[in-house]
Image 1 (tube, rainbow, N blue to C red):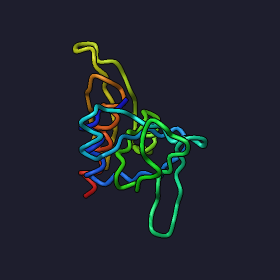
Image 2 (image 1 turned 60 degrees about the vertical axis):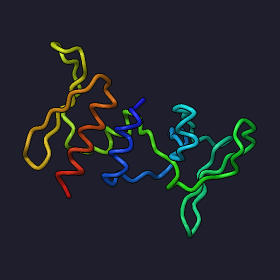
Image 3 (image 1 turned 90 degrees about the horizontal axis):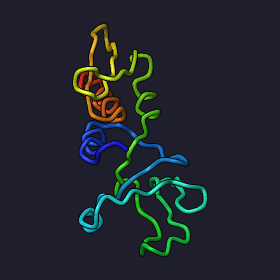
Image 4 (image 1 turned 30 degrees about the vertical axis):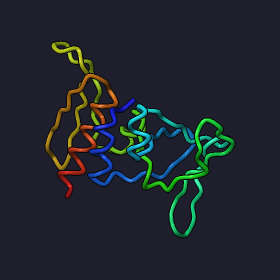
Length: 139
């Protein structure tokens, strides 16, 4: 799973989340953050995304362990999966490979004609760093 600090950087950079079944997220509230890094999963049965004219709300259905009915999407931190990050790279993604020297993972992309390589301990973090670099380069 992507690290919370990296997920925060992607959010701040402007990566847009449109919740779908299977997406994982954490709550941004300080009260929740202090209890650990509990991750929730959007599901048709327990946590559903409801789109309203005023914004998207994540509804908690029958969740007894939390005193939550719903939260605004702005109060949730999306933890994108590896496949979602790879899709965000669109046609710029070239390859994912194991780094033979450091043991981490390397994502290689070509963005606007420039080759870029991003190294991290986990594949999803390497993908996230590549997405972050492309968002920042496009700004």
